[in-house]
Image (cartoon, rainbow, N blue to C red; front, side):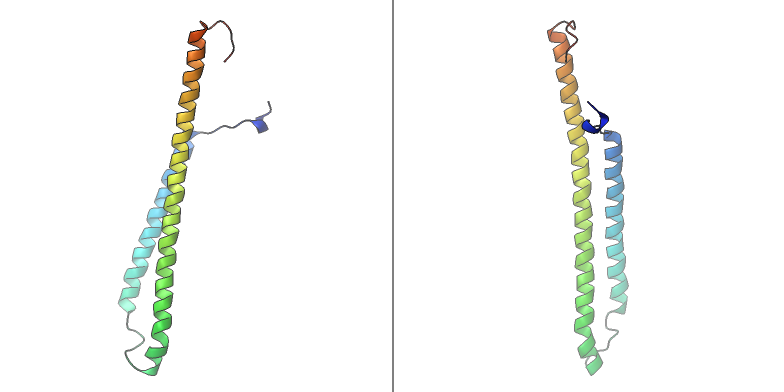
Length: 117
């Protein structure tokens, strides 16, 4: 079997990647909070009831809402990637442990003489 036909995984690196993705997710949530608090300070800048305010407010509200929803969705997507990566690391470790147990049982069952696993 060539190396191209094998599957190898380093659970520690997969887990470290998941932790890094978690940090990216936390940063995206912090970005959202900073955006919301920054926009709150400027709320009402367009005025109250003049023509400019009436034409600008719907656009500003739509853009603020869209940006908030997009950033929130991005954060959720990043969290889902982190969860999938963590689940993958757990799956790797479980598969590895199951296979090692099967090999050990095979060795124990035939007294370790067959050399086949």
